[in-house]
Figure 1 (cartoon, rainbow, N blue to C red):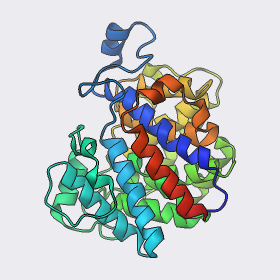
Figure 2: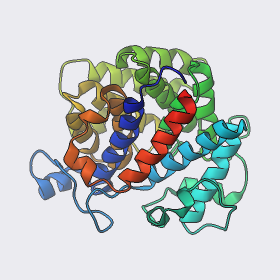
Figure 3: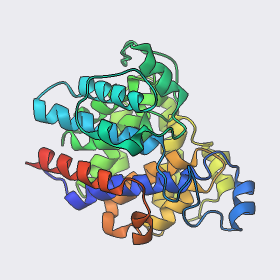
Figure 4: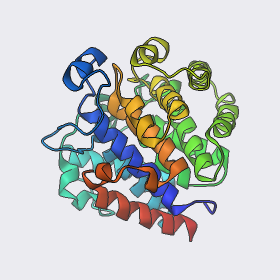
Length: 330
């Protein structure tokens, strides 16, 4: 990719990790419990999770391994789907999986060997040793575990079709339902386009045009269009509206739609992240995806410094991001 702004890609991954960390402390709570804990506005800052403030979850862990796989594929001129699959094997090792051949350097980061509520679909699919593809699905899962790790695929190419195809292929490694892997394709194209300076609404048009060419796109398309309608209607979305209209975000099409809605409705990046996590659903994943979008648009400078300073593995994210930007921009 040649049209990449370094700060914007770093912003996309760091804001995604911040959204993940914000949502990680309330991931399994309904909005009434969130308000009881934090007040009428819900969560407004990091809350303790996994023994610290700013703790990332499996969403950011797998995003990092996605990026490492793509980076190794770029350096070696090898198949990116294969390298990402091997990278996910290394992530599985950090979660107590079988020994694997060391590669890259993420496997040597001790903090990545902590269990952060890893998704059952990802664990089961990767443990099976079977290679899932779009044409030979490994299961019928449409959980959000494919889309939540897809943002780094935006780096791979300036070509919309290539980015969508690659994100869908890496998503299908573990998630066989179209709404599981097509949501990954849409997210990667959105990030790609926003990194290139395309306004978010126009980026949605680009991703939508690619989405409708795929079999099984109807479910994702319907929620994506509804998210745009709600996000541009001038009425601030409430947690209740998010849940009623778009669901909880536990599956791919819902998580992406919630991220799009909250990114469109956001007053600024911080506001968008708080909108994206304060609902009765998969708060860390929706926060991560909204952060990927708004961080790509606004850059790392828009992320509040106190959130960055407390963010777990910020140095790892920055190091790997910088390596990737150098490799992909020459």
